[in-house]
Image (tube, rainbow, N blue to C red; front, side):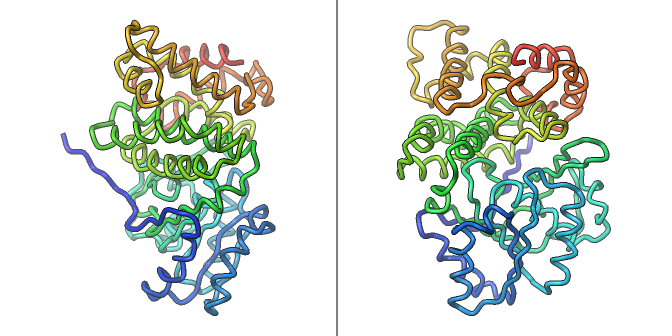
Length: 383
């Protein structure tokens, strides 16, 4: 069996690392920046901290700040038009997963205009050309979009979150700056952090995981689980930096192994109800982990050890319970909603949601084969 690992070429970690942006732009001989962001980041001091650098060096740029929380096909098309008219040669994505995902779609289509419909990028697609270069500066500790080959765009016509997978979309540079992560509101820091923990756990349990991705996932679990509460509730700087590092490491893993039905079920909730992705993952995660634990309790022992749990002298079922109970406890500490009803899900939609989740691209990789009825029962359990 052949395993492949794809990562981005350069990454900076540490506070004030955003200062390396200008070095990368000059060394790579770019001439104009197209900044992709959203309205919230645009109005905050975060974007100013980036444009201040560009202004200091008289480096030209234009800003596209119309990215939606769950970016749509039209959102991407508008971005492509704006990029083409800007005459820029590099994209700088400043924002969370939605911003970086939108940047990836703009990048790919600008270099491969035959995909201007956007929907043809759904799934695993081998585009002809590398995308327009992207430098990613994430503002959240969750999606790891700055290192993955995946991006998610919503198709309202099919009420579907398209998971697009393309090695040509990986940013060439990522800048992980704790000063920027520290600006996240508490609720956002909680849900994005749980998104990152989900990446680590689902990636580890994926059918396509192997030694290299296991290394990433287990270390990511340790960093995220042990630090997320302190990062969210106490704004502990070291904890924030550790979660930021952990979410990136998780991305190095799951981008090269895949995910599972936590994400399948979350994608359905996002497409139908516009539930924020990280929040959906946080609610779903412990239930699916308990479901998966029936077939791989030995892996839960490894996860528990990575998380710092006491796994001595316990049975297989106790090992699974220990990990799942730890997730439930962390959800509670982070004030995550306890069930789907609290985020507006209607019980009569469960069958439809389960069908969408079953057909999601992430479902086949789940460590335990899931049927539509299994997914229905999981949705009902967490309703």
